[in-house]
Image (cartoon, rainbow, N blue to C red):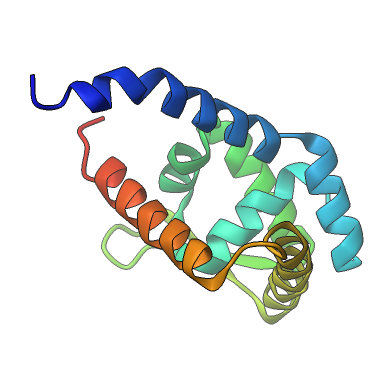
Length: 153
């Protein structure tokens, strides 16, 4: 088998992905990021706000699928973001029954503050990395994300 090196290394790759996801999903990291950004936003709302800013306008069903949460939970959380003035919901252009969420200027200010805090964290994390190593990581992460996005679900 000409792909034996891949098969042999898959357990190590899988463990790396588990380790990364474990760290990324730690509630303490989100709390620290919110504190660094100077935000008092509920921790569970942060990933929704960021995705709405990055991908919006976006429907609640799509949003729920992207973060692996139940539609009704995400719908309630988006309503909470709307009540906070961070997003607005409108009928979708192709199907008026579907509601899409978009970021407001207040929400954009919050995601900008999160981006600044995230940048501070990243600069500390990668401070000892060479430019070449960082560029290689970025290139490979893009390749991995692109490949995973093209895989059947």
